[in-house]
Image (cartoon, rainbow, N blue to C red):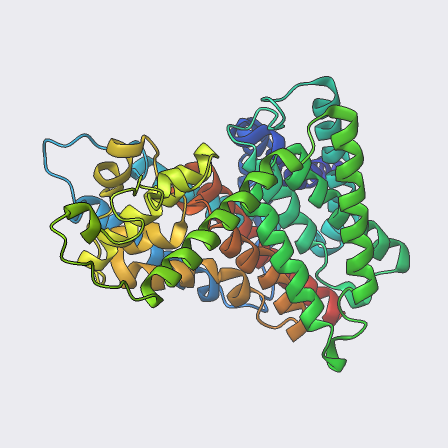
Length: 450
């Protein structure tokens, strides 16, 4: 009976880690697998937590998590920013917060129950991501997509892009202890993550965040103490160039290359730069006083009276998504300046954004925090986002930086363009991941101590 139970334990561990990966194309539809492999085994495996030494204090996880969610729940009831007669948004809600807390518990307890989690994650996760990439590739080639964007059963194409890259960057932790073949497999995943974000999903914000992580890794490699402990410059260059070449080839094969979405971004930047330059020149150039001829048209400065509202954020870009973002950001900044310290209330985006633009959020997590809770909530949000740094205490400085860069900084840069932590799936997944990272950090330190 005991060998049978051990085999069942191994299968549940495998399925639990598999659920972390396949959630990138299943989205919330991965819940049944999470229940079977993540929730049901918990009471039967509680003995695995007995007499175990924990290298990281549990408070490193619970304090930032608890402060962030306690404030969120408090404002949800007592500081909404809406009148009693105003319609309530579907998110945030008490149900959303409850599920987030449950996901942290599942990720934490179930992660600690996985035997030799660090070794299993190191050996298994890269190949799970390869399998996920093959599935996304089939969807792309077979036309199982929305226009040119693959999302599988997930509600948004950002989910495959964000989760694939996040898990890929986590796989870099412990780089100095990896074999040559393990390193090249991870570099291949970095290249594939570029294909997923730029070509399969067209996720511009995630692609910018990827570029930021590559840049941070490059800067880290300039320090002599980091050499050999993180991917070197030629590794990063090989991954980036391979990813771009594959994106180009997939674009030719499917007529869905990244140029269509990214070109509008560059056009918008060019338009904004030209408008900024033009406005600067108009400010710097004095206007000569008009001659007193009695002709009112002569008193009009050059260009005056011919404005067509080109500085309106919604008209800066022909890309509707970019135009809406710029307009929402401008409205958010104006609201922040009104109440910068404590914001307008947890549900105020319903009035500011949803009623006007039809979106649940303003597509910038930092502006969302500032609008709803001011500088105070922004500080709590950054504390919550930094959980991977806190739970990796005890690992080498390099590994802590790799884990924080691959999760906190990567999500942080991506959230300049989307309010991921104001949407249910992303919040729930991040909470689950934080619990798993706590367990992974302890498991890695167990390996180092033996």
